[in-house]
Image (cartoon, rainbow over all chains, first blue to last red):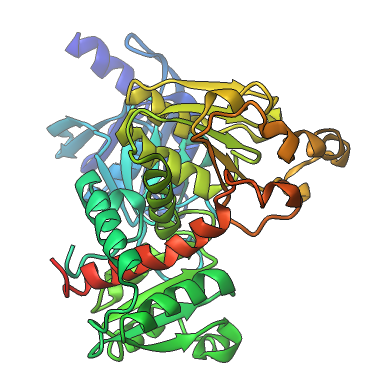
Length: 155
Length: 303
């Protein structure tokens, strides 16, 4: 199984050092690029969409050279692509592999969808409690309204 | 409760709610007690709300406190562009407690986090108005002798009314049966209904008021606003179905009382006012006792 996986990954060339974001739902690949500001990225960036996957049917993959994501960035990935796996690459080899996880609290990274929320009027750090992880729902600590997957935007 | 801000009704436990109602009862019996003579209460009204502000200021004054503040943002540094953060930080140097009304949702929670002194939320946009909920609970307990096992009907705009949402949540602590009467467009939001279901309580939904009146102990009326309807024709169709007239109360239970957060427009006709079941003006008076209780408890001058 390892072997098949590796063969498929190679449909997108390998990177020497950096991070592979694997098992992204195909339709979310461009969103992941946007929220991580990778559309502005200056180093090597390899993107695959609609690749065959035994687990998911079709999947997307992003390989980012010389980039190791911080926890805020990993939380963003988890919110838009909860199925994603992060693979850290050193010298063409896998140094670490981990599934992203939706946190129970989300700070700073998400905008509250309510235009009348104080966090959209003043410079206030947003805070949410994740009240549903399967059908993503975030309750704003300030206005108490629910931001859902379809109304979620990032700071 | 000493030094605890009150932003949402759920910030206080059921026991704390009861404690406030008991204290409010003491103030009803003896409204003038100069127990806050050494204290300064700031009332910051970033949007006008004369009724709520006067009720708080009356409560503070009856306890001997000094009141400072503003009644609209035009007369404050807000107009010069000062942030809420800076206004609250500054005022919390001048006062022992802040009472605040603000048009933005979440503003009171934010204020409670930057303030050095406790904050009482007197309404943050469409979100919360917890002192209204406490005075509603006080009125219900006072007229029924208990909060437990009552049949409560909410009439009118159940979708946008924060008063209805907060009171419903609070009543879920008391095994209430809910009777929800509204036009289809203005039903109680599913999030609030979920809260009722989670507590394994029952609610019934109706579009007609008449069949509910004989069943209930409390009839909580609200105003239906024209601007809530996308289609003005829909408003015209339903507007007269949610008006309470004295003749409709003939087969009501003898203990039934009518509440309304006020101001009313036309949803309760004037001939109801003389019916002993009408309680809405006394309900507003109860607000002063409840606010006295909150000021005293949060400032820690009563146990």
